[in-house]
Structure formats: C-alpha cells, structure tokens
Image 1 (cartoon, rainbow, N blue to C red):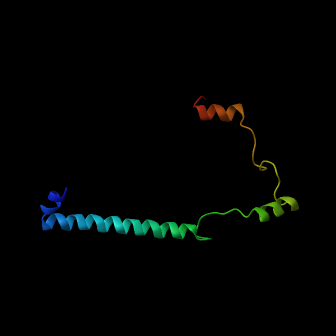
Image 2 (cartoon, rainbow, N blue to C red):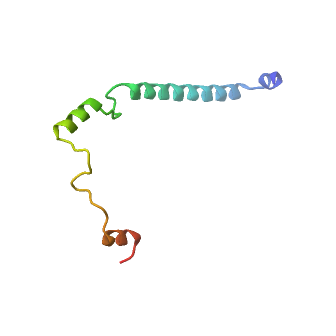
Image 3 (cartoon, rainbow, N blue to C red):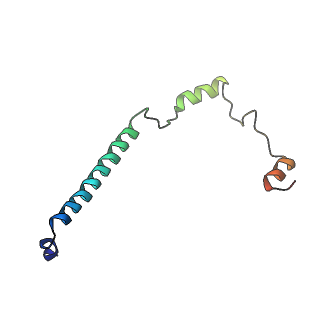
Length: 84
C-alpha cells in the first residue's frame, strides 16, 4: 500500500484533496442542518398535548370524526375503481 502512495503524482494528490474537501463540506452542511432541525420552532411540527386536551375538554374539539367525514357510498367507490 505504501508503494501506491509513493507513486501518486501531484495531479492525483490534488484530486484526492478535492474529494476530501467536498466530503468535509457535505458533512458540515448536514451537521448544520441537523442542528437547525433540532431547534424549537424551526419548522418541525410539535404537538402541544396540554393545549389539545384543554380544547377537547372545553368542547372546542370533539373526540370523534369531523363533521365532514362520512362513509363512502357505492357510487363513490365505483368511480374510484373506474366502473361507471
């Protein structure tokens, strides 16, 4: 293995340095992104369980399906399957 290192030319060493530099920049970019994602309020949604429970208890939210929810009718499921 040491023989291969001795036979490297300047151009080869510059290429290896460029590859190493790119890998370092990618690692730093990913690390910064992970740090930003871990911060509170950085775009990741978090659920406030206490506020949700208060809204359920006051009746603002109900522990059932939404008013717009209904079971599919035969007509609707036929259209989805492609039958007239």
